[in-house]
Length: 47
Image 1 (tube, rainbow, N blue to C red):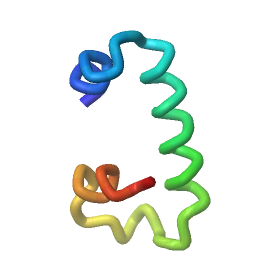
Image 2 (cartoon, rainbow, N blue to C red; image 1 turned 45 degrees about the horizontal axis):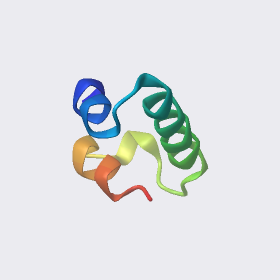
Image 3 (cartoon, rainbow, N blue to C red; image 1 turned 120 degrees about the horizontal axis):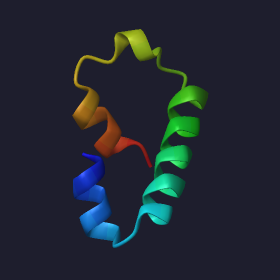
Image 4 (cartoon, helix red, strand yellow; image 1 turned 90 degrees about the vertical axis):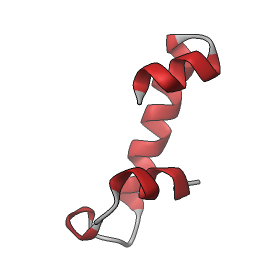
């Protein structure tokens, strides 16, 4: 997934920023991480 995002964004700095933003959103979410059944689909919906 990281390689795909890197190709889409063009550099590793933007990938790192996006990863950090997504991680914070997942932590702040009201949904328990243990309850996530489809992690890829969940990550696509984080926004």
